[in-house]
Image (cartoon, rainbow, N blue to C red; front, side):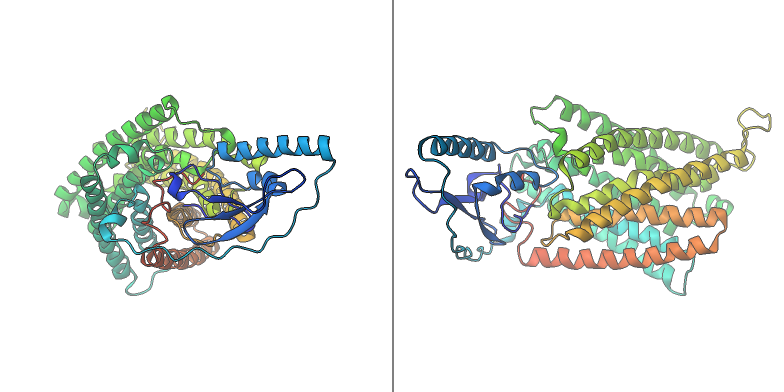
Length: 482
């Protein structure tokens, strides 16, 4: 969903009924200046602008905007009209002021069935954020009585919400034939398909934390069947996310959609995110697994984590180039910058966890050189390096949002929660590894702020559903807002 900026409008390539309507305010007779008035179907804003604003408008297009042919045609019309006027009659007169138009009437209420047509894959950002919150609560270094019960409640609620979201999405695909294929191949919604697997990752790790005893020996004695189920779930998850990482990027590379580098958006990282979280899952579950299985899980997790962070680094190059060339995104899309915090943060968390997940007597060559202690040291060094990169992206994102906060809710707001959950968990792990109480208290403060952010976004999410700001034609990820 995208919202027009004050004093301008985002030109839309969605269906005609959802496009801003351009109305001429004067005739195009020679010597008379022409202005346009934009009315958007959402009713959120209505503003007048003239041709002198088009350059500023083009620069302020949202982060996922592909240059509009409509905008280019206006540029060409403006250029030819301006040249003719200058050649025949001299410089054009000053633009006349126009009285702002009446706001459009309120949007009609739609039935639940009609609104389900716009229930998108991006709803899984809610469940992956809730699952991340459950993990964060369980990992707190300064716990108080009842905290674990609160975390368990969040874990159960997340399971319920995941089932509801999956049911609603299945209902959309069943009621509206062809929407499944269109959702997967859509140039905007398709990038949110991997959030389903990210939600699965939080469910697997939360199940380990809340249903398996933390002591490895006790866990192997009392939760053998559950450990086996978690192990099977891990290998299935690795196979599926590998298919997604290869298949979805292959489709994007071969598709007819044009993704200009100046339109780079953080959601381009999402297809590699699920397989990268295989390392995070491995860091959580490997310690309680039998020794042979635990080593295999760590090796697989390290491989997947390496693939994920390597592809993320390639995407970072495009992201920085886009920011250098085109500037910060539109205010409504700036929360998406927090996605860049996630890859290095979750990799730092995985490095520390996987090193601890190895058996204490692990020594691959049996020569005393590369043992568990040496691997843990390397993991801490790599984690500290990557934590700093996450901190840099966090600073960029939070300053960008503070300069121009978004005003209308869309599901991209959840990017301010899940990636920062990984950042906070990595901070907790580093503080525990270095046994530094100052870092641990700093991570506690980060956790409190993240919980408040979660509640803030959740409130606006619920409100947006009630007032029809989402799940409504033209306002979700199933349309191109450019």
